[in-house]
Length: 298
Length: 281
Image (cartoon, helix red, strand yellow):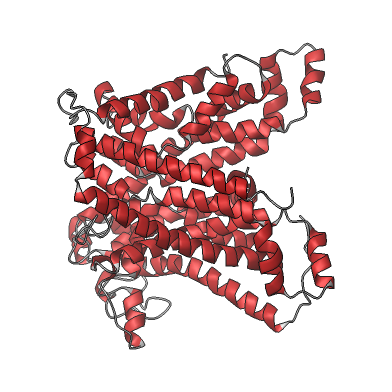
């Protein structure tokens, strides 16, 4: 990590700069805190108890009722509308959705990225140009016909339909991995060729182990995108058995009355969608921020 | 060829085939239920006379200006501050948090913070004697509030991209500038900003194209597209046409037009990028 020279420490400008940075961080983090604070507030106290940093009578009832641990009567007594979130089921669905796409897509795109970076064959450059061009097409353009296709195949409401369009590839992942493979020195493969290893062996035994970092990075980013995905799972998975968390949250919102929304319940449900992301940051935060440099710029 | 097989299948079936089919749909009256009939260019001529389409373009452009403008300026400042002050991973992790959260969650959180009656924002404004608003239900405020929501969600991410660009700047440039007695502000405007120009241009264009595709935040507001069309952005309009009015043919024509608009924007981007080759290279 390069250390850029900076001005002396206790300079008034420096204090001001730190203040601005800290304020920015507070603005970033505070809404999450307020989400949690609301989720812990009893619904009927929302109006009277809304100033302190911590609710007077913190409660877990909102979490219990949104994940369906309370009866309908208890639910309504606690200020809910009776709508529930089958949290564990949706979480399971989200995890399957993310894990499937992240792993399969990463490996398929790694193979293709390798072929595009390292092997010579006719039409290679044309194919690569097509991938780059397709990066610029807004997803909704292909989403409409893809939806029609899933409908014709009878895949609506199934995991197959949810993962199909992105399971095998996205042009971005191919592009990203190809750029990385281009930077691996040729000598390494040449040594393997002399040892008599075929392209297939070289790929799995030399290239893949060397590229664990970038492969993991793109897998992680793909998983995050899948996690945030809303429109496609909403369209394709109207069936509760395959519904993911984002779609479940959207539907939970629609069930909450427009005139008097169930804010404590909605915030409890929102907190539940943030927890997995927070865990991800705790375990892989350093890796994620350090990979930013090469996702955005290369 | 075995290496390429899965990706080629994925690309052919879910990118190339739908693109061709989408172009074809745009010349039909397809409604998802009965088979499509060709209507020639009728969808496109309808589009020219569709006030909702023009409105959606206008509303999208308004959103893009507000959102990209706000987020880029803030992100440049944040990245500059981090670059000169600290290498802290913890700070960067905090900045990344909003980007990792689903847009639906962010949208919900802001619906709550900006709620007309119980929201924290109105509470604070009211207690210091400023005027309160029904943020998401006002024709004037709904779009700026949505823009603010996404600015909050994406500024940290954008700042990290710019920060990564700044790390490429070699140290001796700053050492020399410090020796010459340049202040931090001067170095920021004279060195940092010009030297990250290529990254900045790239980030700007990616943000503009991304912002044209705003959907989730609009979709979860109490009156999506409204009040009175004030938030009916082009992505949401296409979604409504296709999945609420079952006008797949017309929706495809609007989507096709969006492809062309973004294509033109991308070309402008290429020009811009070429015009702003790094002074370091």
